[in-house]
Length: 183
Image 1 (cartoon, rainbow, N blue to C red):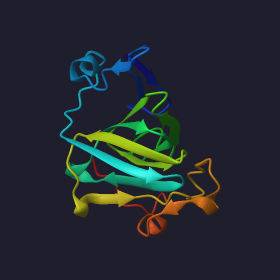
Image 2 (cartoon, rainbow, N blue to C red; image 1 turned 30 degrees about the vertical axis):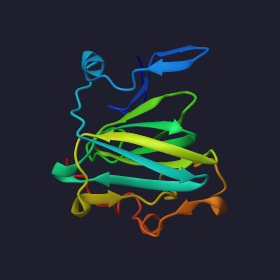
Image 3 (cartoon, helix red, strand yellow; image 1 turned 90 degrees about the vertical axis):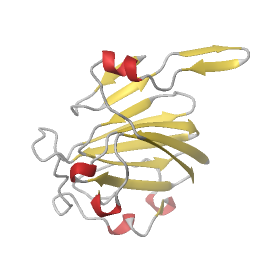
Image 4 (spheres, one colour; image 1 turned 135 degrees about the vertical axis):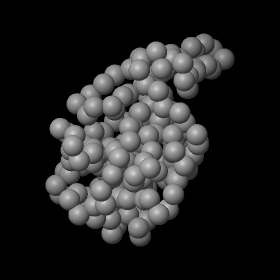
């Protein structure tokens, strides 16, 4: 398992070892002990999966307070641009975002720590997005950021005219007007 860090503390790209031959491939998609050896000790309690078509943009979402969630995300089929925004008030990277392409081909995973707004857009015709959470979902604890907030400056790659976005996500607040994460 290869772990790569970036400029936002606690965010890791995880690349599993893939063993392939003429029959296909095998990989260990999750190993609590392997991550613990690297100092990553999340206790994941829930798995989620979403199927979407090209241009579907989901996010930017987060859970507040005692319901905050860390996530381990990956793509089983297709390709997405995965995006996180640091909304931890005391973080030196508050308001900064990070993007990575996750796909069935590259098999990369992204560890999203608590205190991040998270979202993705589907780049392929279809995609199956799967993720583990270290806390259950609570509607009363949800928060979000507006995906096209100019202050964030996120390049979602696709033409905005082709985006498919929920009614909830087009009215999310901008950074600074958002609900505090209260970790």
